[in-house]
Amino acid sequence: MKTTCKRLAAACVAVLAALSLPACGERKTAELELFAMDTYMSFTAYGNRAEEALAEAGRTINELEQRLSRTREGSEIWTLNAQGCADISPDTAELIGQALAYAAQTGGAFDITVAPLVELWGITTDTPRVPAKAEIDALLPLVGSKHLTLTRSDPALTVFDTAVLDPGCAVDLGGIAKGYAADRVADILEKYGVSDAVASLGGNVYVRGTRPDGTPWRVAIQDPLQNGCAAMLTLSDTFVVTSGGYQRFFADPDGTIYQHILDPATGYPVQSDLLSVTVVCPDGARADAYSTALYVMGEAKAASFWQSCQAEVEPFEMVLITADHRIVCTSGLADNFTEQEDASYAYEILAH
Ligand code: ADP
Ligand code: MG
Image 1: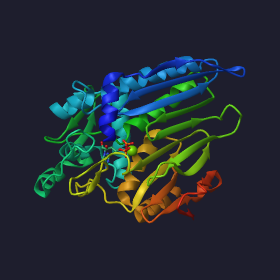
Image 2 (image 1 turned 120 degrees about the vertical axis):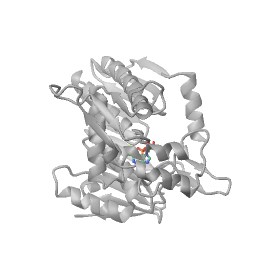
Image 3 (image 1 turned 135 degrees about the vertical axis):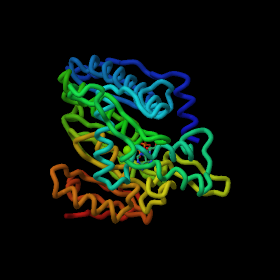
């Protein structure tokens, strides 16, 4: 299983490749590859301070993982889950705050308190199993944002520094941490004045500025049914995040596929009419949370959620690949979207 391979690779070496600095015209090129947050990440940046920026990006991602991992003993999230209360750093507080907001916006389709069920199924572990319905039903009351509170240890503090969980509840940031890490990478690139870069954190991509030839970045949307890409997006200065059931799953001996995104309302892996959801928006954590949520919602609810967000201050765009072989692209991306000629999908534009 893919997860197993990734874990083995992680055990061998955390940082696979160090920085390299080939010359590219007059500008320096810096590249970094690493394995963190259970996925491969790669970064390319151009400019005088690109090397420093990527070095800091790598350090920051490793630090974030040490705080945010549910499974790493002693992490802030591990401590929160083990003790029901934990001191948390400003990053963790900000991320939990965002996660709670996205849970509210998506009607709980995205919900980090789904952790007890993630643990029960163990879908991305080496020992996944199909639980009995009674086991699932017993955990469902533990899921919901109302069970998680951010507080201040001192009322004089301006930021939250403590998280509290109701008994038996737990938090899993797997659906948003990579997007949050991508946001921090964008901040670091800005800090070092790096105007052109591309970062790929698993299914979370950030494109900044342009390619070396001055044209926008091209982000491929993977074909969920076969190797290769189903469509191409041409973009600058935005985050592109894809969620789907086709990469992390386990197959029961009876042949049933259980993928890793759970419906917090039922406690079961989502049986979606979507194969993948790609969200494009200027906020990495939001793109990550929404892509997971829209996959849970399915096509019809995802479309109405997109419509409802257009009327508000924070619109986003998306590409849905449906189980009945259509690719639905929202109108704001129509000019950025290229069909894959030999892909077996019908293409549709979703307008307001
Ligand atoms: P990936 O991590 O592969 O990029 P996602 O961003 O969609 O995919 O996150 C899926 C992960 O988030 C799961 O592996 C699990 O840890 C957690 N998760 C599963 N279902 C949900 C959900 N409905 N809401 C929030 N997190 C979830
Ligand atoms: Mg996500």
